[in-house]
Length: 112
Length: 113
Image (cartoon, rainbow over all chains, first blue to last red; front, side):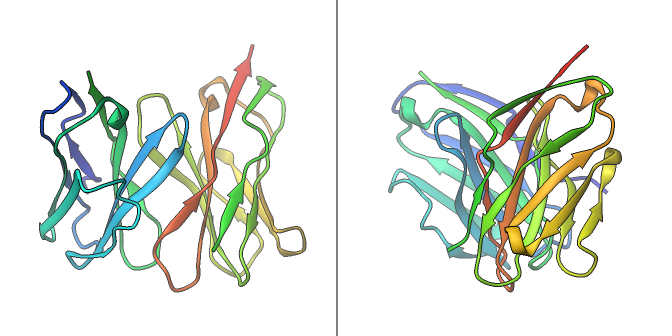
């Protein structure tokens, strides 16, 4: 079975541009998580969904960040407008219930 | 709210030597505990987990961890380290009945020849 799929793997953009990160969770999983990893702050939970419904978005840094999950097999994390301080590795993870979270390979975002 | 402390930012171990990575958690009830490993440029891979039962948990790649409630610890061990074990290791705690995890800051393992 394929694991969590993220695209793109690398994204380089200029400040002010819109960035969209994509995630396909493992089939059958009902939870989806978006994390951000930086040297300074470590691994931070941004938002998570249960059965496609956002449950907790308290980790989203500001209104420039938004996430959607239109169906059980797809989610997006959008940053508009992007800023240099958004540069980080963004991970998507999925789980079945309150069990193990399986992580995707991540998207390395660089905002110039 | 739960928290996780990994007191060692970096650890260097000689190849073939034993390894112990420390993890202390803060949580009022019985936690769910996890160890993940992250190789450079990769996502996090689950090594092992503890939900209940036997406090000594076996994982992949020859790793094990022991849950000690009295010490609020979940230390990761391996009897003989291989060069391929060089990576960053994360301990995480989850609350019973909830799906979110709180991660420690990670411990970077370096393996010397």
